[in-house]
Image (cartoon, rainbow, N blue to C red; front, top):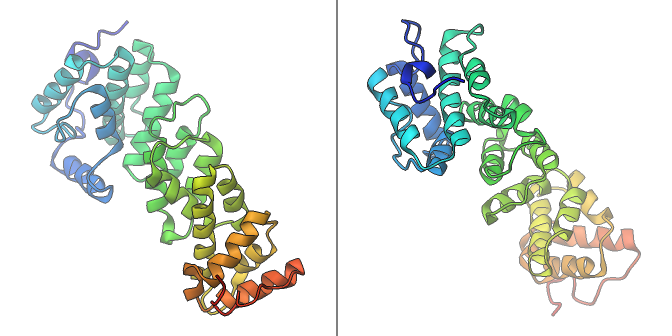
Length: 292
């Protein structure tokens, strides 16, 4: 088995292209800026116990890479986590050496790095280069842990093409089925669902505790009203035709009559359309904003 504690047992000693020259380092830093200063490899390094925010990319040629290699070896992380970071660095080397370079794959084979960590690190490597479609080919694998699910979801939503195409974050959510640890990831995903499918967002809200469910429902209605100014549109029609529970029916009418929804010029028409669909009358004052 390869002894990964020796620098040149891991990294090539030849005169081939280096990923951390001036141009390579500049490109990596540019990607970091687009991600609000944090790459996925930065998170992996922190999880390993390396807190230096400037650890990656290594500076100063081989000397900088040697220092990072030493930091990895001396970190308190488990062996397979250390191997995973070295594997990521070798993906950088493969990238500048061309399609025939297999440094990362050979390293994984020679160190018996488990397949799931290879898949995870390849996915995170593509995320760090904004190659999101390639990233999801790996990150949606069922064998993977979901420890970075919140960050993956928030990144995919925030970088959705034109701010409207949420196919990738929704595909990731439906495939990985992560349990979010942060409210930020939950809010961003729900926003993406609400702007994509009213019914899907509705069912998603029902999976949450009662304390949060009404807030999510009202966010859904607000999203529909916001996007239908000047006409109710497709999502407005989805909303008024949705199979609502008794509580949801009440929340809808209250939100449109006396809640934040009343500020939308479409509140009245949506409420009227809903009464037509359900065949139920409207409470006195419900459409005038006078209901209490």
